Length: 187
Image 1 (tube, rainbow, N blue to C red):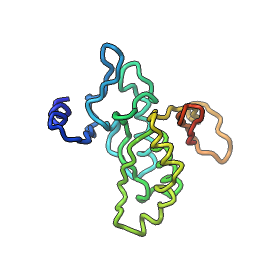
Image 2: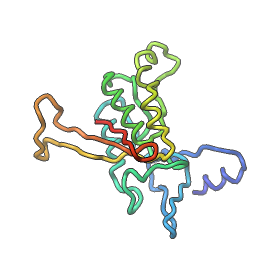
Image 3: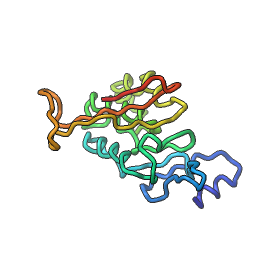
């Protein structure tokens, strides 16, 4: 909070990020209004370009960060929760994993910060269809800024019957968009 107060006192517009994965989270004041000492706040540890890391960081949205707030209430204009930067296009993630990664970050209203070297034209061209996807970007930029919520999941280890050909674990995330009459969903 101290840094936020000092930077805001300069009168200059400054984007403030808390990427320390610490205990300085937004909070609700006595009247129930969300107070956010920073514009973006990371909810997870450092991500790696491995599918297990991507999913592990995403799961951090499910941990109760602010008492009484569900995962879809963690983000909003001026206060964006995110599970670290995007590893889209970095090995060993496959193109399909990169597409899913981007879609999940888009639907959770996470800031879309690319770890990809944009100076590497070959790497950028390989994932251009992902990072320039107008529909995914529109979902991410939906002004209501609601984060996604976990709609359904199946974990074989917990006794869920997984149909043949599907992975042993799957999840469906979604959020309302526009005037809340439509939903964006990533499975």
